[in-house]
Length: 395
Image 1: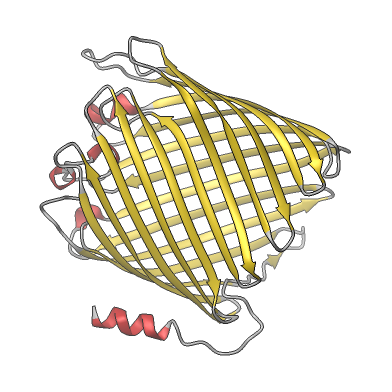
Image 2: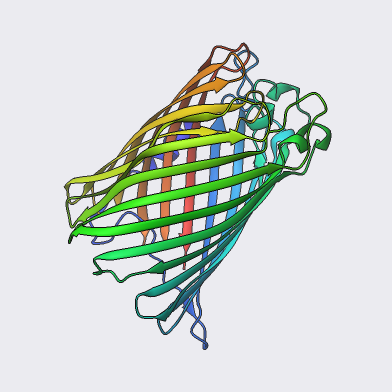
């Protein structure tokens, strides 16, 4: 760990500059007007508990390579974006955990007429699950290969109303799926497809604030059913009343309070009750920002149980010590209460990071992440520390 400490010290050396502590890319512009921006991140981290085990702790050094390509174009009032990112990691003491993740997406924002807009968004993911998380929670050290998840998300949003309109309407259609691609005999029972519907009415009560009513529906259908289990197919309804605001240079946020109703197509116990989602940003000074996030929802469990009622609380402090030097400190608490099984989990997480901008196009980041999970079920709890350093570049 001596080398890591030295590298962290190097990343904190600051000099005076008018630049901010973040990458400032200058895209390559083609003759047709496409803006092409490549990114590259080289990273090192040490994880002292790679299987998230409470007893058999196994640590490893990890090196990573993350290239990314972004493409942006504008045609009149319409905007188009596309990206692709690959994340390659090698565990020096545990080749089982080596992974290659893929992320890609395209989106279009179309303005066919005044006060009318259409957004189309598609995202593809092919990601690994760390041993000891997701389906392998509590048995990570028993796996001899990683699980991979392939997912697709497609969304279509129509909005009516201008930025200064008194009222506005939004309608959204979506579809998504999740498919495990390894250990199919175990994992296929968690493969699903989902149809999504949403609508929103907005009313501008103040130049800096909007009131709204939002309705959402997610219809999830699982692709396989074990002979000894009840169906997990469910419809999840949300009805929220909320407010969003943005006061320049001071505060912004959104608060949604409402009701969630989750019902199954079987004898599984459903959920209906109070739900909320909230995010608040406060800037006490120009160089400092405080963010508070909280939510309560009922989610499908990765393993056993009917649903998981989870409450999340998170606070983050971001501060610019110099123009080129920025720190982030966050704490989150997640409480998960399972229905259908005797299980109650609590997770605490702390993340501290420091970023220093060497050049407009070059950024060094380093930090530490601590996580502690407690559970009423044996074998689920663990403590984990990760130390990381990355070099990030662009054009």
